[in-house]
Image (tube, rainbow, N blue to C red; front, side, top):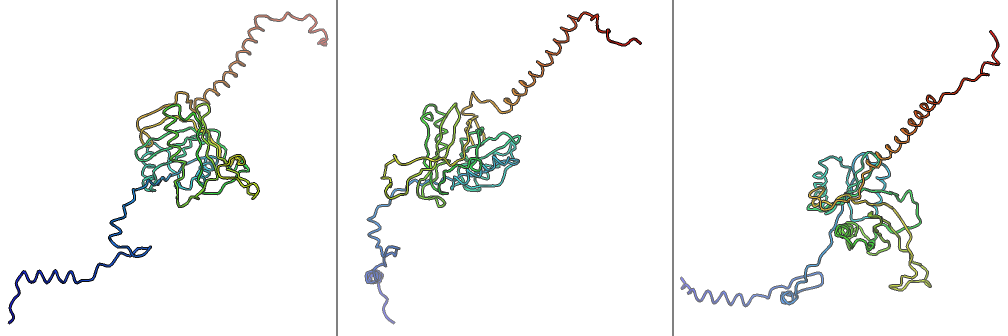
Length: 316
């Protein structure tokens, strides 16, 4: 039998084998072969912020056709939104809608709630932590009603413009930020086009937010080509829809929570209708009072008997 090697000799042989082995194969990438030394030299890029905003758009049951068409117009204007089936407008709608927003992978929600087939309320919510705003929607005009000449490509990104009034008070600043996040289409969204050809205009008049949508019209002739930054030849053509938002309350949570702001000038549509009925009832009461005054005047001032009343009657 041969002699056993010492432990030190075996370790030296193993080191020699490791040194004799082939060098490690470089890493293969789409751009070619890359060695480990190059990976160590290249610094890792800093993580960039990517806007992943998604909006859930839904409505309550028993909504009228005009308000449903307005909701569909908003769906066509926002390529980053997701439409869902109707939700029952009950006291538990907040929990149901929060679950829907989470299931759809959305971060915001636009909920159109119709009451008495007359009044439309819109909830603008950041889920799940809030805040949320409740609006009364007035002066609704859909694209089908207006039939305006403006037209822009579906899915293109809009420019958002706000009037200077939004920077005056704190609640208007909060509403401006929420409108920017909900109506601003994320860059490089898979359903959006990579250019801007229309404008969303938000303006405050009489403590109401008025919404307008305009197409940016540019001449297409080679002779009239507009230079970069030249706004003289650009015109705005309205597309639609039109609506007016009257803010009612701002809540700290999603579909509820502590009240951050309450509009002191808000009057509910029920109160307006009740005042109209009272004014009509006042007219009827005035008529009744006039009739009673006439009867009392006739009783207090009776006519004298006419001497010639029976003059032409035949004698029986």
